[in-house]
Length: 257
Image (cartoon, rainbow, N blue to C red):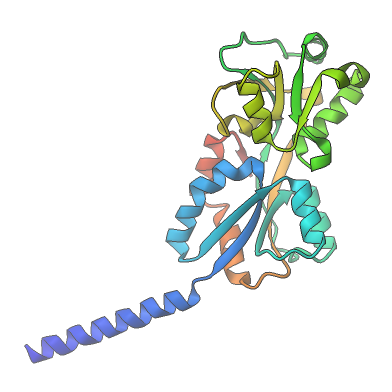
């Protein structure tokens, strides 16, 4: 009995050492991520925390805002932005070289209030005609740095209807605000990312922009150069390519890379 007690004590002591080691290695990281990925992060972060022992604090903003804050020296551990912006941040020394991980891509789409008859956007001409006949449309404010808002501003210029669209176009700072106003019936047509359908209820997905007008945004993750927890940051970035995350991305309207 004494021998068994001694063995049990040794096992307990060893377990304590292991647990203390895990606690010592556990880290808390700050992750800056686009609003478009908010629904994905809320689903996958708890799984990352359980599997790694680390804690990830997610802060969402537009891509433009994230880039601006990092360039001004704001501290973070892991960052997710559009691929071109990540490349620029690497050139500026804000993201660790070779830490890049392309996560997923997403296109731009058209939405209407739930229950609204489906509209025809099957061709460039059909889409242009619908924009001109609509009483109002809404999309992200290009000045806020949201990728769908920037692209839509370019689209109306390309179609030669910017002047006609300006009086009936409403701008919002985030995709969430765009969709909430659309769901309330305050506007007729909403423009956002294909993944935005997962952000709120009360809207119907019409479809992606016509191929000739489509724009895909690739979201990429990287480790911040000023991270105080680089190992935990790299673990989080690697986790974003796991089968678990890929499944969630697909369910939210993204195309995993």
